[in-house]
Image (cartoon, rainbow, N blue to C red; front, side, top):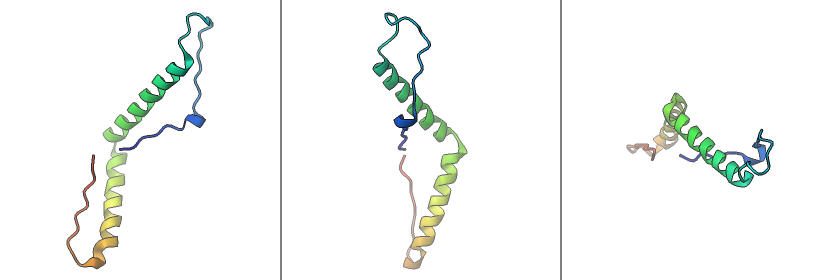
Length: 78
C-alpha cells in the first residue's frame, strides 16, 4: 500500500527554547514524517476503509470485464 505525506502542508513546531539542546530540525522532521506515514499505513490496514475501497474497486473491475464473457478474478496485492 502506498502512503504519502504532503510535506508542503506539514510543519514542525519545536517548543524548546535552547538552540544548543534542540535536535537537528531536518533530521527531526524526517523522523516525524516516517512515523506519520507508518502510523497512517497501520491505521488504514486496521480500518474498514481499505476493505471498503477494495470491495468497490473489485466490483467496478468485475463489471468492466464482464462483457469478455470469461471468468475474472480480481486479486489485490498486499
